[in-house]
Length: 396
Length: 84
Image 1 (cartoon, rainbow over the protein chains, first blue to last red):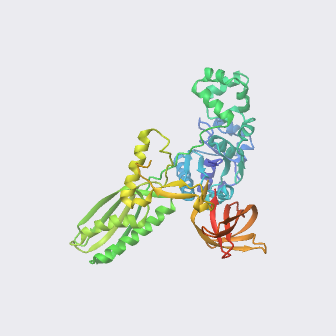
Image 2: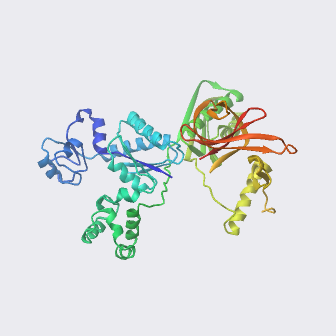
Image 3: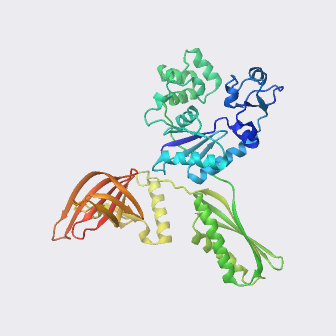
């Protein structure tokens, strides 16, 4: 799977500039006020032109750039801005992994034209949040992250499949996500570029650095498992409806609930999410309330399926006072993902689990829902080269 | 990987005089045929179910590769396979 990494360069500066647009075009140094004893966290391009760099002491930064505007690092504002970017990305792509504070990884598995999609994400994020990003694309997540940092704002750097080592070869060791001590020790060995790690014997690196040594080799080779851990939005979705004239008739109530479920499910599907729990809160005219959580056996985003369960709760209100207010809340939201696996080639226990799953599906949806594909050697037409047969344990 | 359409779905195709597809319309979207990757014909024996089809594996504008065929008896075009 190809991975797109979006990097927010000088993010703390971008956040401050959103709060105070008058900072645009001025040298800004984030990390603290100039009289404080601290270190620089982030600098604008204008301040960087004076030689100010992150991790430098604030006093040194002030001596280099006396006209700079020194501001404290506001972590909460940065986190909030970062989550705005992540939420927007999650609306555009089903596989999103945030790597705080400034990287967001997107899986491009579902995109036929990855580059066009990446351009769209860049422009959508800038349009909706005002943040400018850079993007790197590679099948290796670590390489995608470095590529994003290497390119400039608004640009995309694609590292073709197989060219990871070439891309990494001349990058300095400090770009590796390893401890400072490891970098220092590698410098003592005369290694200053990532590509030079591969000149040392792998066994010697492992003997010297242990587990980190193994990671060093993987980094230098430009390999990793390329997996993303999809981000789960823990938020909830809810919809409330007030009735000016309290509703007395069940049909009207059911229709209102059906509309609410339809609207919530549309929003859920738009976010590529499902929910596990729906909570129905009903307030009656006589001030009585009904609070009924509905837990679904499996995550659901289909309106008819959800409505079927919720309608049964509503029907319990038949003998009660007219309804004034209904609130429906969807919680335990989860990603709409599935895992493809091979059961039949595994150990006998896996095979038993497979047939158990088949029996459950057949019991729920009918015998024809799972069928086995068999090859027909005599068929000349493509549709005659395969046939479906019943899938049961006896036939294997 | 490819998706095989078990029940082929009828599509609108504009073709040259030699019945080579030039544009394909599917689900209200039209795409130009960029190149024909390969072409073959299947004739099935008349005593089974007489079938004569011209198959084309084509690359559409946008990169989609699919397999379509023209039924020579009816002149209809059908989509049979879409490649990843």
